[in-house]
Image 1: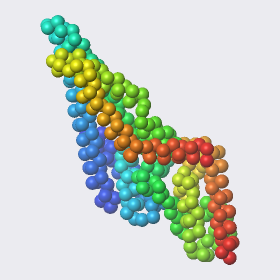
Image 2: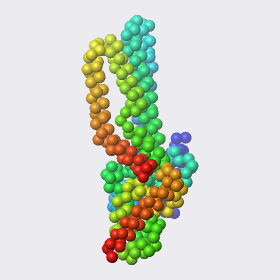
Image 3: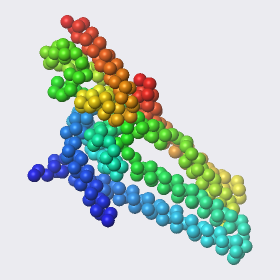
Image 4: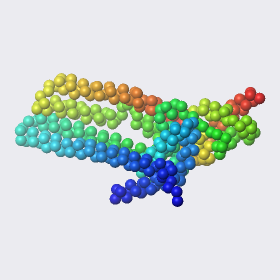
Length: 179
Length: 177
């Protein structure tokens, strides 16, 4: 009986990890600049998926469930990683345009072929703002982000609007100063 | 079909996690056997001391041991349940609030722990076969508890306080920021 439960848990775990592998790896890449740290966090997320599996009742969408584990893991990863927590993006990041929210500015950044400015500004953000942005970059709706963070949808909207505004002002300002 | 487990290296991880789960389960079961096994023994000793030997003081001592063991057994079970039910899939804010509560240095659980310790203290004093005076018990046993409390608090300050402070800061940030 106990063996059956363990086998089922193992199968479910394998299925979840296989289906969400790329999603988990992406989240780990957002928060860790080097490959070793990414691997460590990936492992930590898998451990937490295993620990939380018994409580998974399917009330939340599987993707929301995974994002919650990934973000919670990133916040409690290790003291060291927490203090140095960075949000890493590159030009291939699919939804990057959505956080800059300005086609012209986005084009300028693309033209420059460097995301140093954006990268610097992203890393000035608070830990929670970084988490919110990483979920935005994942293409989650405000409702889904609200489910992951545990706040209301309007609250998410206000926060993201504020962060985008800050980024736009800072990047725009810095870019213009360089011209 | 490609064996994804090998690519991910999750096979070894699962084995490790299963081993860890089994280890904690064994540990908890052993501790529970010890606690719940000792409880009837002390009850038996209390009854025997009172009815067979007519030593009321020793009987009270055994009953106090028994009650302290009941408290330790319940607290230990709660700690295990808490550990076993850590759910990383909670909404971030809820998870942080739970962590903030879990890492507070003194809670109602700690208060109950001290009640158990106090009962044990009196149990030792009432046990005539040990032959300690009240102040000797306070000096040795009480001293040990004070040292253990200080060590526990130092561990809290060095290991858990930062986690709790970070959790509190993040809660403030989410709720007010």
